[in-house]
Structure formats: C-alpha cells, structure tokens
Image (cartoon, rainbow, N blue to C red; front, side, top):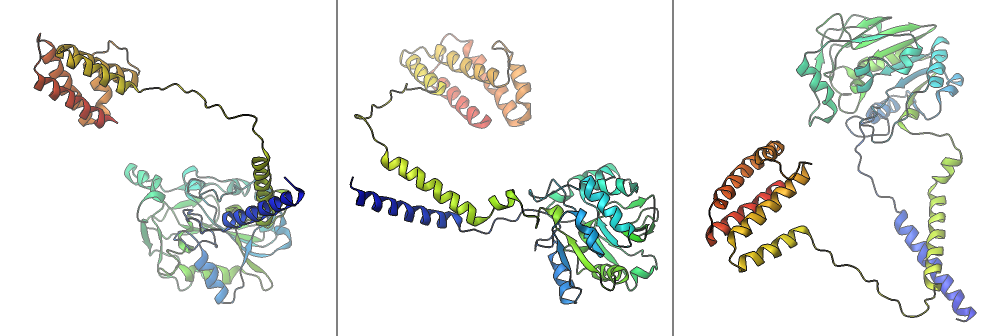
Length: 410
C-alpha cells in the first residue's frame, strides 16, 4: 500500500468515526420513571410546578446543587424533600453526617428548613437529619390492611388522596381552609407545635419545631407541594404562607437538588462525564479498532473450527420413541416416555428419580392446573401400563397429553 493510499485510509476512518460518534451521541429523551420530588421533574411526583409558580410570583427561588457544608454563606429558606431510594430511579444521594451537622448550624443561625419526609423515613421513624437535630418522631398506628396499602403505596395505579379540614388557627396557616395530600399516617414529634390536619388530634401532618434562632417545618409527605396536589384545595396557600413568614428581607429560597443527584461540584469524575470528552474517547476507540481491523494480516486460509453437533434431550426422547413405535412395542414406548417425563420433573424440583407421583404433584401445586393435569396423566399412564398391549389410539392420546403437559409447565 502506497503512502498516499494510507493517508486516504486514515482520512476515511476519521470521517467514519466522526459520523458514528455523532449518531451515537444524539441524546434521545429517556423514559422518565423516577418518582423523585425534584424541581426539574414535570411528572406527578415532581415539584417543577411549585418552583415555576414561585418564579412567576417574583420570589426568585434557586436550585441548590452543592454540599450542605456550603450553606454557611447562604441565608433564607431551604426546601428539602429527599427521594425514596426505592423509586428514585437512580437519582438519589443519601444525607451524610457532615450535611446534617451543617444543616444544624444553619438552623441555629436563624434560617428555616422545610423538611418533607419520604416513604422510607416514615417506615423507619427516623433519619440522619432528625437524629442530628435530636428530634424523635412517632407515626400514627394503622390497621394491618392499611399498613399493607402504605407499603405498596408508590406502586399503586392511582394515588391515595385525603382531605384535611382540621387546621389550627396559626399565623402561618392564614386563609387555609383545607389541604389535600396523600393518605399517609400522621406524626407526632418530641418538639414543636403541630398543625393537626387529621381526624386524630394526637397526630399531625405539619409540625413547627423551633431550633436555635431558626425554625424547622416538618411535613409528613412531599405530596402537598408536588405537581399532582399543588393546585388542590389550599396547598399552595399554606406553602406560600410559611415562606412569606420565614423568608428574610435579603434572604433567598432554595430547593435542594444535591440529594436528587444534581451537583454543580466539578472534579475529575465530572470532567469524564462531559459529552465532548466522551465523544472524543469514542472516536479514538473506533479509530483504533478500525485501523487494527483493516491492517490485520492473515497467513494462509482460515481453518474452520469443528464443532460437535449437540442434540437436546427432547429430540433424543422423540427419536427413541419413534423407534419403539415402529417396532410395535407400544407398551415400552409409553413406559419410556412417561419415565423420561418423571425424570425431568424430578431433576427440575431436586427430587430423587424414585420419587412418588404424589410428591411430584405436591411440588407442582404452585400451578393448580399443572398439579391436576399431572395426577390425571399419571393415572392414565399407570392404567395403560398394567396391560400387556396398548392400542395405537391410546398411545397417541397419552403422548398428546404428555406434550400438552410439557407446554403447560414451561
């Protein structure tokens, strides 16, 4: 190959690599399955509607995408709605001890934290942040059937709703007549003043807890501010009343996004995740692969590999059964087919080959129809094997039943 041809080849490989990188680099909208209450999400569990509403009302909210240790330079109101790790869809960062201690110091200086509990925190009755703030929480006891519903609440086709009409006349709930949210158990905190929002006055769904010079508002669920429930009843009014009461004159309103997996911290890992860097690495990989593939030389003709032809047990059974059938040994055919079926079932359920038919039926009881079909098949085959000779019609009928039974248990 001449030098000019080599340059043409390298140029062609570069163009091909560039086109492939562009084709693979076109980002398609991914399926949004996360139930994280993030202000970036327009889904039912997201809080984008609340964030945009505050923007239009002139509150100038911001998304906080840094470690909470950097909150010392901020003042105002922070809304913290952690994701449930089960339904976050990978967008989840747990609260660390350093972040919890930073929040504690931030509250003591006179700021406000609005904390919305998630499903896992309700089940455990604790969290890293509450432990750091020395706040213990107990939840409303539920009947067993209601507790089962709560455990599967996030996987139900429709969300369980509940209206709360019992609202205490507190300054930060002015004009709030009714609040609508998810049907979750109420809570009682070791500190603070609760707003009942429930038929049971011992348990509340919003709790105000003074801490140092600041305040902690503890909500039982983030549903009251998500896209699905925000416009219902007086949900928006309640949230705006709290923010109007707590925001400082020169303070800001922050939506925590750091614990939803969004970060503005830039490091070596962030550099490798840049699309430009990934495209460059992909182009280099494709270029090297194509160059190696085109410059590879073979010495002699390739020798095809000899592979053993393997047949399945089912083909072997059918072939041997056909041999018996042609020899007119119908009884041996039926006995062979039935024994092969029993051996396969015994191996499937880790049973000895001499296991009784009733033992096999017990293992098939998970599929009720399969257990009944096995008893019927075993009874018919046992009845036919008692005779010295078996007619063609009986043999064919028994073999069809075996085939149908195999299809049933697949």
